[in-house]
Each structure stands twice: as structure tokens, then as C-alpha cells.
Length: 152
Image 1 (cartoon, rainbow, N blue to C red):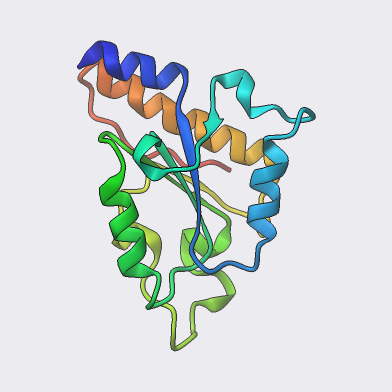
Image 2: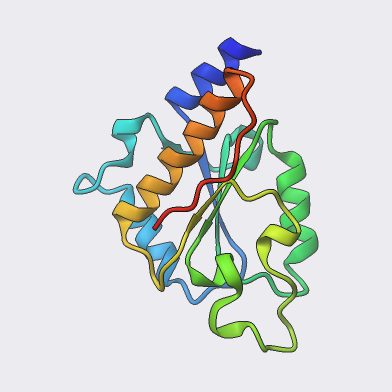
């Protein structure tokens, strides 16, 4: 198991999950994949299926219709699956916090390993969030307790 965690920390595969956002964070996630920022230099690859993912990049505040679907997608991921909350909406529901249709924050449903605040966050911050989440895998491989880091 330790060897597997060490390999996952070197090249995490990322699945981008939008849960009802305004698409600002989605555009910045895609911008992090461009040659200018090149998230692939850390071994990160954007995959098209949650079944292949090691990291879930979650954007947007979860509304009542997306909560069961997000939990289903998280259940399809191979374990250990890291969750990175991208943007102010995923971290704390953002400007939708008083909306009738928005549920609790993401971390009340899923274990969030890294937070990337901002509206929208810069691509550099998103890359740092994925790298911080990969550090959690390194800590798990060393049998140390892992605290969720927060990206500033």
C-alpha cells in the first residue's frame, strides 16, 4: 500500500467536477492545464472518468439536486481519493450561502484535503492546491496522521 501511495503522490490523476458554479473557477482550472501554467509538470493528468481519478477538483456550491450526484461520483472514485475545494463557493458556499436551494458546504459531505479560496482562484493557486493534496498522500504513505492543508 505504501508503494501505491508513493506512486499516486508522484502523478495524481484529476477529475474536474462542477457542482453548479458560475464557471469562473472552471475556466481557471482549464487555464491551469494550458502550456503557460502546465499542471502536467507535476504529473497531473485530467481524466474523463471519476473511476480513474485520484483527486476530485470540486468547483461551485452544491445545490440540493447535485448533492446526491456528487456523493455518487465520490463513491465511484478509487480510494484513497483526495478532494480539493476550488473557489469561494466550494469552500464556504460563497455568495450563494443564503440561497434557499444551496445545501451545506462541501466539507460537511466529503473529506476535503485542500482548500483553494478565491473568486475565481488563480491557476497558480489551483496547482498549489493539487500539490498540497498530493503531500497528504505522502504523509499517508509514512503512516503519519494527515491534516487537511489550506492554500492561501
